[in-house]
Image (cartoon, rainbow, N blue to C red; front, side):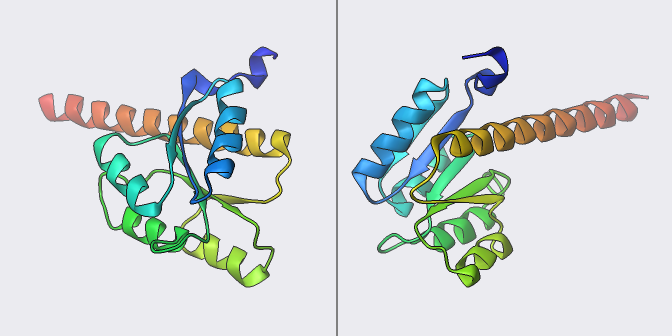
Length: 151
């Protein structure tokens, strides 16, 4: 692994899928690449765990029983504490309407199953790096605002 292949500062990625084999395979790929992985086997479990500790990124299965990926994303966006967490949909669905719906629902990206491991890792790295950069900019803006209020 080259330095550019490394995970950005051990980013935390939540993997949400109702199929244990999918969570296990995606999770082991991410762990080997240096990411910390939070496995979840339902949308409800994912939302509960995000309320305790927000990950840097969520890989979310689009079609799950009870609470599907679209509903999870809707509930995330309704919660100020987690609404800015980037979500990448993982889906076997190649239907154009579902993929357009994914973006219009607020997903930052999607990866179709079966996925190419290098593609998945590249997308995860990119969105984790973008989130970290966005977080740094927000912190700088808060720091600047606080220093202006002191004057």
